[in-house]
Length: 477
Image 1 (cartoon, rainbow, N blue to C red):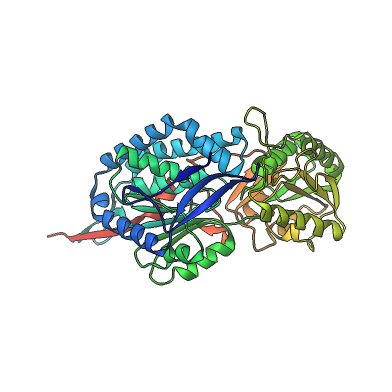
Image 2 (spheres, rainbow, N blue to C red):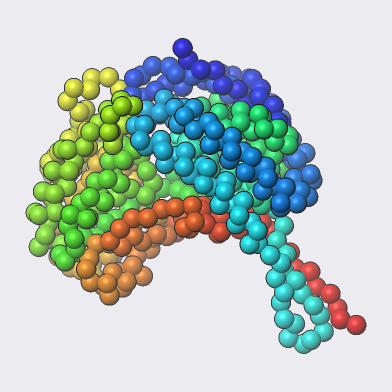
């Protein structure tokens, strides 16, 4: 029987002006019906958040911490339910739901502690005539647009720093995966969180969604999504002066040098690429391999791709689940077909996995002879496809890695030459460079350069998006 979930606005669980069905892409069956906001509901949420500003910003940090830890306790007590929401709404393998859950629980704890480290600062007056203080205060209302690929992780990245900083927030989960976010709204209501501090709604159509950004109430618009969506929201939000913080698309390059640990590189490339069906903004896209080891590395990647378990079975050890919907499946399949038509070879996958006739599954795919003319080279894939590209010139390959509008988020280097790794890392125009490994966590800054975004998620730097800086100067008598 399908669940029914309500929006959380002004401290209450409420119906919306519309309803949306949520379909599990692994089974193609309806798993939930959720309330969806029309423009009147959006207006209600904006006013609820605005009304909460005076009380929440004035709430002492220690009390905000108590609320965050109370919500964390509720999250921990409901782990099974929250993980099952993700498992059902996006067909994510059960093991993959653990990361989503863990980041929500850990984010609430991390920012409850990190906000204690935000202190006023004293500036030395060069003339000795004044005393100066820098103070950090809550920015005001935040509106957060969330991507569907990590429903609770993405929510955590916005919810926790906003609560810690003292900013009421409106969270707008994707219409594809609102169930787990709405479940968090239920927990907020159960613990009696002050009205308007957190509001959670999805929207039916572009009109209500744009109304959130177009309003003059928000002081911050923050997004996890595509570069095009980021541009659109900045345009729509230009009705007033607002902060923007955006983690946007990427076309992550991997540079594998001849002296690299090829097994390590192949393990990381395939695990990160085929996890979550490749629907990860930091996943490797263009894998540049020095020609001397190209054949050996290619064979290792192909062997790993063919060994990946694909499907939807809570009891099985599965790495790759389905694409989010048929449209996403068709887009990635179209990129594969375009590459093949232009000369690429399919070494593994390339279509539906054998034996899976239902669901939007795409087999882990490896392509070689990929060239810059191909769409799959130029654009973010967001699917389980590894594109292999040989190189000869160690200097020129860095420029190739930097080429493209959708770069700027994550990149990877594999080499035993640490001097080379450091030199290349400094030249790569990416917000994150991973050398001989991969590490993401709530305490590590996460953000892009250029068209891949502004601002940061995770780490203490995320608090900067939700705080304003004020200078207080006093003349000495």
